[in-house]
Length: 102
Image (cartoon, rainbow, N blue to C red):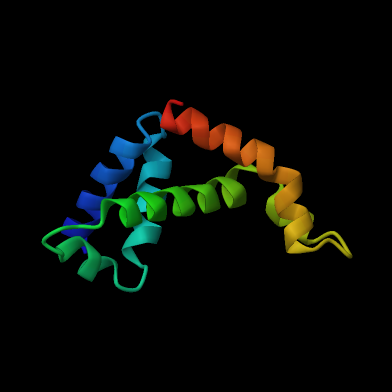
């Protein structure tokens, strides 16, 4: 898994050049545990679009859970996941674009 995690960290760093090292590690670690990730990385022609989308989705999840009040919002009585996501959406996207340098 170490070699796979190293490759994933490199890919995350390429897509998100301004992402702090701690979060590069976190995104790579989460991706390394995804089903079929090893198989995807070992394909002769890696579907880059799929890898980049996985990096994007995983990093958005990391931002949402670790850098916003999303989890606290889920504890609010009557708050749905969709409502909590909507509340933090702008903050999540802003952070993602900072990491991506866009």
